[in-house]
Image (tube, rainbow, N blue to C red; front, side, top):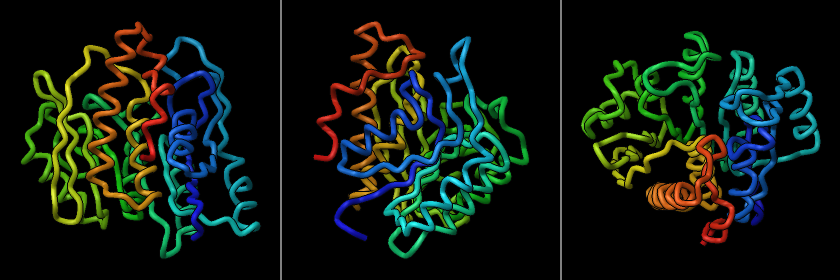
Length: 274
């Protein structure tokens, strides 16, 4: 691998939203990393809005990335986010096996569910395929609901104990994943991101913001990917990502940014990569 780090980011492109590739591209660029986007779909804005344009890219994805293979492209990291169908999960599986070599790190953000329920676009077979996909990952970033799905443990709410998080992470680690980051564990006034990595664990605590902003999971995972590409500490990555999102969410709240618009992170990008 060269000095220039390169990431293949597999996610949807939501044009007017701070989520998915419109978060990954600027964040990874701020880390001095070339972000090569493989779109799963093209949207005018994310589906949380009342209206949106949507163009499924599934039938184009293999032809798209096949050209990368033919031209000899290599990647320091492969990073997948929201996947909208069983076939898209299969395509990411194939992509990882086609492009991974001894120096390639893989981050899978297993975007499947929240608040105890799988998303309307998901089904049990897709969850099974995601359980299979994560075996190829070095790092995964599930929220509490997704960690329950991946570990086979029952969902009891976002206010789980650290011992419960550790138990879930150990179960997931049996698939071969080196690092599990369980995000969004709630207390009365704090949010906890829990890390289990190669037998070690770590807890990062931040203040809760009284508004839920769309796309914060994508921002978190993109920052983690930036650290991975630079071969920096995963614990430092989680610390920075947690504090950065808490601060930019607080700023966005004070500025009256609409929750659907996501956190206003652009003016703080200069802090990344240091």
